[in-house]
Length: 417
Image 1 (spheres, rainbow, N blue to C red):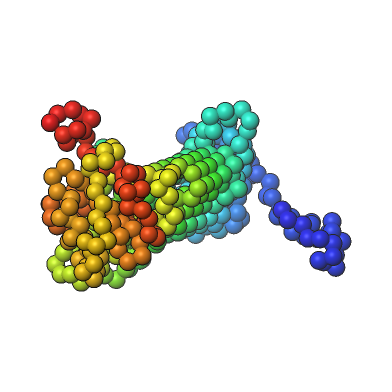
Image 2 (spheres, rainbow, N blue to C red):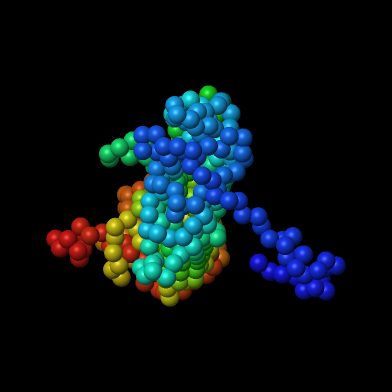
């Protein structure tokens, strides 16, 4: 907290400091346990604070709780939940169900719009491990604020309602907009794929997926971004971070734009430190090559932008590829002098990404681009990826950071020719 100089205020310094000090709510006491879940009764309160070190692993909430168990009403007053405490290498499983008799994908079950987590790290946490927090039925969550946490947080904001190879990467919440963490090493999974409630709740039939901003603060963080129906802004912060991006072809329903299945991308600020950006699948999943105009619109919407790429520290990885200088070429500016659009430039660049050359680095406008050709040679298609690096970087320096050699290719680690 920053205190004013006494000359800055007419009130005594001690009084001014007290006026600025935030009031910390006393942790709530549990109301009872049923079937292994400990419930906290919020009654008519808008906020609830839990001490994570005294709370059990399985936590639920209810308007009231008695000998018959938890009781709910159609409406709920609880809109903010705060977790406090210190790191203890524990798992806390939160069920956000606060309203309606039962929770399901066809109803809005949670009134909790803001989840604040303030956990302090401890000297005994020698390996900087994080506390695991799982979320279920937080379908109304808008903001996650872990900015005051110094301990690492491991939190999954995905719904995951389908098991096996069809596991869904849909969002946990139909309304999530902001995810902020603190100075610990955090592990986050965030999605702009449609939450099931948007598909199943009649009142939300015309609602659109929200763009999400992720700010992971300082520390070595791992961010998994699953992008489909809206853009994502990622600020990885200082520290050696891993940002993994998976872009899925869009669909018209609930898309953030009015352009039907218009695709989306990401804007990433890696921050200081040795960072790795991984594109787990083609970023141009929504590419439309039906005309030059359509192609340029798709390229603008679907690529990944890095605002602060540093070729001396950062790396770009495509899929499970590894670094091989012969897999990446540079296309000189002179070859693109007649290219008057990004799509036109790529049509020239694709002539270089043939055979065992899988990626190319080039300048267009005032920026640098990395193109990954994983589809048909000699053309741009929805199997390819495009990364925009803001600013004019040295092409050779950037090329040295790109991993594009597939392991099954000649020279790959699997070893066959």
